[in-house]
Image 1 (cartoon, rainbow, N blue to C red):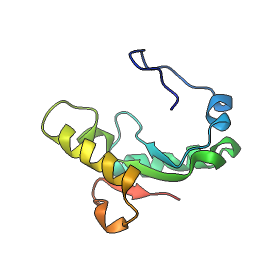
Image 2 (cartoon, rainbow, N blue to C red):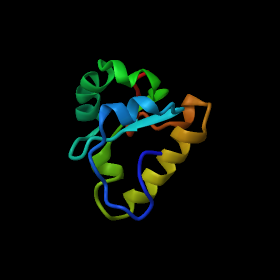
Image 3 (cartoon, rainbow, N blue to C red):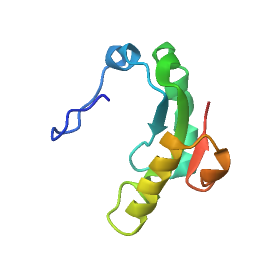
Length: 100
């Protein structure tokens, strides 16, 4: 939602984030495993601008998104479960944690 196809990633402002109403936010801080992402999450969730982030999941960025290889496929499958599943059983506990 907050990126342009084909453009480089960029730092977003809190005003840009607050202006969007989203259903699901995937919190994937670069360089962090799942436990590290969960530990970093309070800084995100404590901001008043984070109210419109919908369901928020912390994920294991190191294992599923940051490194090329077979686990990238697992990352895509994880994203599909986070975005399209209403059944919490479909979300692997070792790769994602619902924060709210």
